[in-house]
Image 1 (tube, one colour):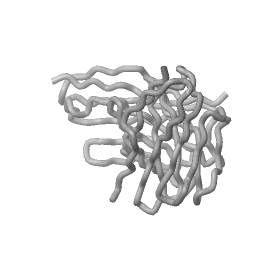
Image 2 (spheres, chains in turn blue, orange):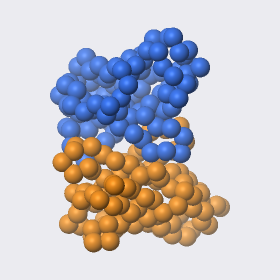
Image 3 (cartoon, chains in turn brown, orange):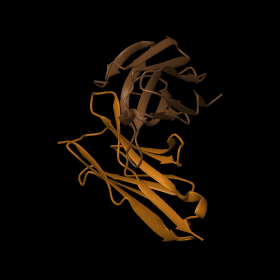
Length: 113
Length: 112
């Protein structure tokens, strides 16, 4: 299995909602990443988990809360988001942190109303 | 400040021609540079990686060069096809930061 899966594919939420994005990989990778991508912009790193521990937090607002329950799963909990948080949220994994190639999931298209 | 620049926002070429995309960077000393392909609404897909001690790398119709003196990478697609139409992102590692930084991408359109 060489893919990263993400659910849901699309999500519409209000500013008072709480929702979660999920990411899963079964490649035995020990580093997992969340990126945010706005239209016509490059992916921007949000969080990095290495061996299930948060190793990089790119000063992301606390309304985004990552969680890594085990080596195959990565969640991103969302609460009280703003319309400017609407974007494509991408999950990626690599063999380990600092390993060159990252494998990306298809992303979750998030719209905050 | 650190910057990655890709030559143009969009590139239009005729089928069968060679597409050449440019990635320039400043104030980085990457150990390697990568190229990814991204289709609309999808995640990036890894294509090629070239290390600082390599001048050129090839994979099928793809060729990447890396000039650390010029701080530039060129990405070539030979015998281009309409199916090659996509956004191509260059990415490099932030030295010692275990962090991949992406360029804004070049949208390639190959016309039949």
